[in-house]
Image (tube, rainbow, N blue to C red; front, side, top):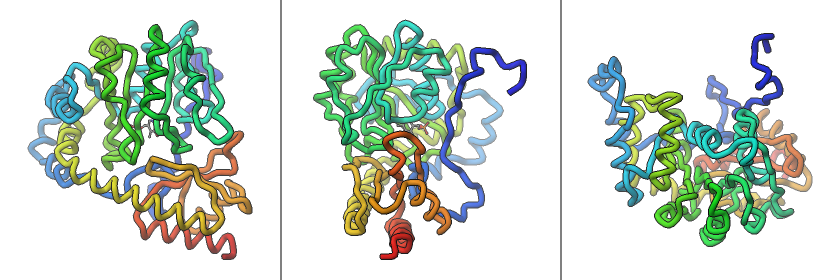
Length: 353
Ligand SMILES: *Cc1c(COP(=O)(O)O)cnc(C)c1O
């Protein structure tokens, strides 16, 4: 830190992304990417003709992309805004709807970026403990008196709240925003998008990173009442109106056109998740009932940090969080069946099974 950094940021702890080794000799099961390539339509969307057009700015409203997504989700283009990853969308949301007075409530164990954005923008934080079994008690968020942010399914637990519970939270907070982060909803969860027509205090955040094999493209979106999208667009235009580059816009549209391919891949990931769960339980692992593209697991005879280190030594990267209540656990992204088998062979070796 230099002596010039504003005192506002002196105590800020930045988000720490999962390891991204660039030599690629690892089986990479640590940042919830897809093991499958993007849809064929995406590969065809990029041509040297399109690359030549990079001399021009893109459409700051990315009209064609919003229209494609709107048709797919049966909403209007006015109900959608895009972000450079859903992380950027979350940044705009925290900026727009929280401050020192209107704080933010979210689970104590959830996506790590929520507390980082709260600190970045000087927002009062209300971290609500999950129950001992890691489930969210919806009652804790009713009449919260703050903005509410919930990942559904939650990360890194993989557990879901029902749409009925979320609707109850939304109804009980008519004067506060409720934000549902659905980064993992395509792996067996249920989306709250159908509720946005009924409530003007609900935002749904989704991403192309996990279920559409496009983590590297950085594309996320938010769906909600048009007055809310207008708020967020105001902040986007005040920060970076060209936040989606020309090539990524094309990729985003092509990916929706390839949705049938992704639906098939996501079914396969769910199948591999269930298969892996059965095999791990046979080895004595305990797992949460994950509805995502990862599992969250512990073993009574092996600490979380030892699982992480042992797998890394065997060429397999998983995620360990050195955090109270979950330090026994590791989060393992669902890869191909071959990758899962290699991971389980390594675990058997470590457990001398
Ligand atoms: C991965 C993830 C995000 C961010 O995804 P982007 O790559 O920025 O779109 C947001 N929320 C949760 C819960 C995530 O796991």
